Image (cartoon, rainbow, N blue to C red):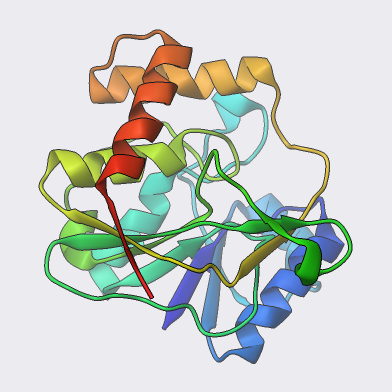
Length: 222
């Protein structure tokens, strides 16, 4: 199984722990990045880098990779896991495979050890995406590493009749660190999210209602 991610030139230690955990459980890892970021990261991580021009640089002032780089790869190569680059795993990721479904992964946040971790409730960090679903993902300005892409995928899945599955118990862990976005960035991605899905444009309302819809549709499994 392949994990797709986008590595960042910041927060290197947390990402190293995460990538090492993926490799230790036998996953193939591919990171989508701009050429300039690959030049910075190529000697740091032993993963396959894929150079992409699908970037949100003009909007976000940083080489964040657009969601379509990932779904485009899946269209051509088959089902993969999309995962934030600082998420550690403690075991093979349990995937319930069925027709017309995606799998949502949530994380547990910790400060010093996994034993004290608590589930992060307001967002999602990874997805198992099939080739079939990838064809339903339109061209989007949303990027991995900022907000609302993690609501965009499951809302699309619900819209097109796909089931949402999620493991009842998560073996994903995330060491707390300074967040990489602020209120204005959250609102910026929320406006993009609303525009692309035809929602009201009231970012707080759209986010709250979308999260509630996603949670109501998730089918949990052991």
